[in-house]
Length: 379
Image (cartoon, rainbow, N blue to C red):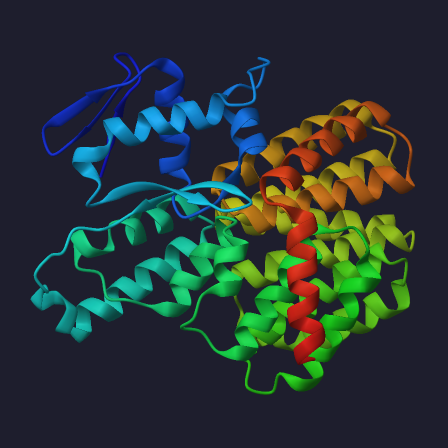
């Protein structure tokens, strides 16, 4: 892999280094860290020259010079032109002899348990690091986890185009993506209902995830009765699973439901129970979501400064997990609340700007059209 030295503006590989100009260095590192993703010239200008006003050909000129400097390494790293869009960096893994560990069933089982543990704790960076170095570490291929990794790091277009997972799983991912990137809860609800009605081959965990998301969508749509139906439908499964992660998520959903129907004392009890659960089981992803829901609880009590602190802590915790869909879900939750309860316009505008930045980075408009086309054709 390429190594970047921010002090010298050098990129190195296998003992050889190339000297880059400062903006060439930033551009190459940005493309390398987002390998496989296409970027328009405007997106690259925003990422590399955010506070400048470069001329129209700035990106093209820098790409031209980078290609010349990277020519000796073209066997494993290339910058491609995507017609009508912009540029994309492609990384090719060097060929390696097959490791005997790939045929070791016990090793494969151990690795699956470790990935599942990282997943349960919300440690997206650890999952990505392991799978990024899968060949070096002789990790067995797992199409389901590779698809999930694409999902959590926000490679939504790559996930929707990728193979290796079942048709119904891809439709479920498309529904989750659709619900994550737009504010019209009713538009997403119909897809979740269709999947639950038709997706009989989905695992229990998938169905539980769909049902839990439906609770949030019903609350966002202003349908507390339907939210309660969804809560009661999934409650027995959550209790039977006895999973700290699913339990924490379920309690967050129920707490927000109780707040919406005015049962503040019950919501406070659920909040305290969840705080105790996450002290015993420190899961970062669930902790981030809990802090955002706690912020809503505090806002409803008129406690603006504590609500802001909880919200900032929750969003920062979620960012650290590198779970992009959960970051989007938390942003949606707080924007929906502050949009209907105008009690902190300063923070609403602040988080709306963050949403707009993510919308540009992940191309929400294009993604929405892609997911709706896929779901409408198959549900």
